[in-house]
Image (cartoon, rainbow, N blue to C red; front, side, top):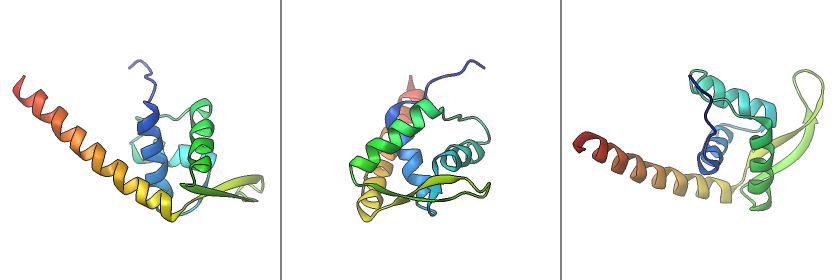
Length: 108
């Protein structure tokens, strides 16, 4: 199957969702999305780190330096209360859009 770019908004939603479970470093965020999607979604570093930076600047996550499981210094991202609120809004929007698309697909 040809590789497709993930829409930026979808990536932000997925990042916020996986961080709801607890802090992760960037590579672990990408791996978690890949795993949870049954290896369908692959997040490129060139998309992941700019998205993490954008949501960091918006205050939806915080970032602290720490040591990874491979003993490397990495930034761990943690969802903030504002990020949790944004996640709920994004999930609501996604649900509405998903239902509308499904309605069109069923009747078209």
